[in-house]
Image (cartoon, rainbow, N blue to C red; front, side, top):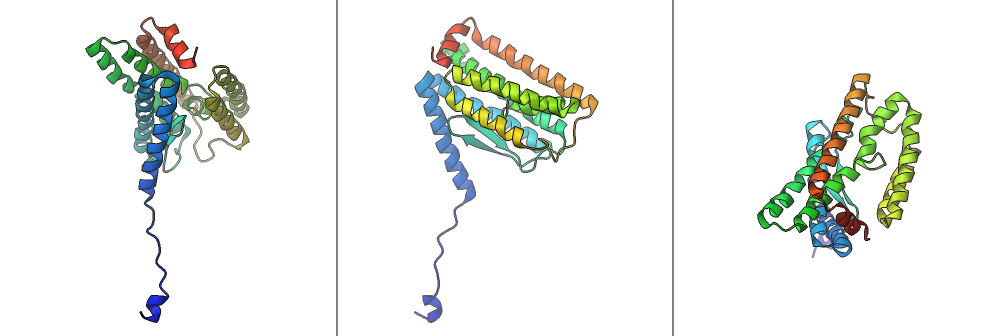
Length: 252
């Protein structure tokens, strides 16, 4: 052995970040599915996982199309997922479109459950479709860090910045109280931390061009349309079983 060889330090192989992210997503998905399965049953676990991935993929498609890609999906243990852009949206209107893309595109995850119901006649598949609709509708609530705050917030800020912050406080507090009242402790903490984090920021979207007045009208119209589509999908999935589904969802 030469002196050079004796002094050589063998470095461990570098960890592939893509492999690490894949493992993290697999573990996080398993935790999310496990929590839903224990609380509500296998169909809710299946619908939750499928619904989250399709919802987040809607954000990814919009981010890539609007210049914020390549985006990626990250699963948050016990809560759901998040679409991570490479760069923030350059305008607030693009941010609105990206925020609304998730809930609207996410409704496509209802399709396999409706097909399974049509093929088997078993109403358990409607529970899955219902839960997918709920995931997307709840995401339109204007409470950080949900999509509704990103879609509606810029419009409120265009009217007056304090209006957006007041809405954050009121809606965030109501969302936390609702989550705690329905025993969704993790969701309540998640929304509470998201609200406090948003309030601590200066300008909430510092690098984005603010909405113009025509864009404000368009943003409000698109938000209302997204709400309408999600409510229609939810009503279609209920099929007269609303009370039963809600009791299952909230552990009644």
